[in-house]
Image (cartoon, chains in turn blue, cyan):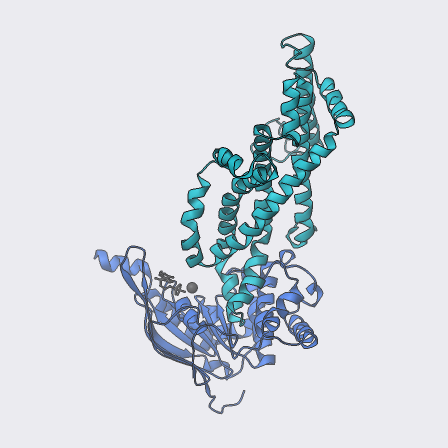
Length: 273
Length: 272
Ligand SMILES: Nc1ncnc2c1ncn2[C@@H]1O[C@H](COP(=O)(O)OP(=O)(O)O)[C@@H](O)[C@H]1O
Ligand SMILES: [Mg+2]
């Protein structure tokens, strides 16, 4: 990919969010989150569970109101959910009553894309995620990995400005997960999509992301923003090759170290001590 | 000795162990055979007075005579008409209301206090009132059947709509769906199979109220025929009436199941 500086696609500035619990007390889920996602970039939000990754992503999606801060996509303020910020969830969200083809057409149908164009574009994206043989199958007949592929195809076919993903491969078994990770890289290479993705899996973040926003918890804050320059500005769709690089190991150890400092068992020891 | 494992002796009773389809059928048939044998014996050995408890074959003859001599089919038709009309009216109100209450907490907050209160009022307690308002005609029966099922129907449908997974709704939001589109393309299709099940279950309740309505004050319908048979001590005709109600209940249940399979073919996972 070119070395020319890419334009900012998504800009997150000073974002905070409190939740009021049933007991009446409020907890600060995330505080003062600022980062950018550049055009065509895959940015990963990484951090231990409960550090507020999903909360940040949901605010970007417009599914959650920010407590404070600003969110801009292509220079325009974000208000509420919209088709330019399509989201893929960890849990399966295929519409069981629609076939694979109809699922992928769904977003385009909402947005009034003409029938013929809808059909062709859905076909294209179904082929892209290698589900051509299952076009007329219902989701109940598909495996978990296939359902996530439908969700990805459905979101991409709707042409979002940015693709949001919340641990999309978190529910899959290890083998399916890395197949899906490699497939995602292939897809992104052929579609020029900007992605903001949440994960708690260090390996996944390093392999997939161009940039990693590492968060800590209580409250959720950004601890460090890391780049994966060692991949040479390219995305390599071969996980084995990436994991074998010495720089990969160094970065993984660095993140593991930060993650360990965050671990709850340490907090307990600290509190007891 | 070889190392082959000795098969464990099969036992009759195993926790939650599936049994072969043929065994299941054989057991299901035997319980009915035993039932009829006991009934027959009770009459033959005079454990009971056969005037009040005729044997099974007499009940069938009673049914035959009802059908041939007393135009029983007309009464059956009238009963079915009352069920169908009242149930259709109840669904016409309950389905949209339940969907809106389940979708929007504000709508629920408005209607639910009323609906939950009515749910605890036994419908038959309204019979005297309904008799005064509507007389002994169809209006009274249809009104009773209507208030007998509508409150539960609304509540059950609301609960099913509430349990539509939030991620499905949010997926549609991030694909550009507005509220009306989400209601039409996510909430309704996602909850429809469960709504149909709720309708099937409440239809069974409807039959209960129908019989009550027709026994209390009616000149037509299955219940009325049974009450007339009682006056003439035609016990076999009363039992024939019970038999017909049971069969109709089964038939409607079967039809609803078929309809369910027809409307929601995508739910059949065990196709492969
Ligand atoms: N709707 C909510 N109501 C109350 N607390 C919430 C809600 N959503 C998230 N939280 C809290 O905010 C914090 C961050 O949650 P989340 O964003 O889901 O973390 P992550 O995705 O990193 O695991 C957690 O402490 C969580 O309990
Ligand atoms: Mg999360």
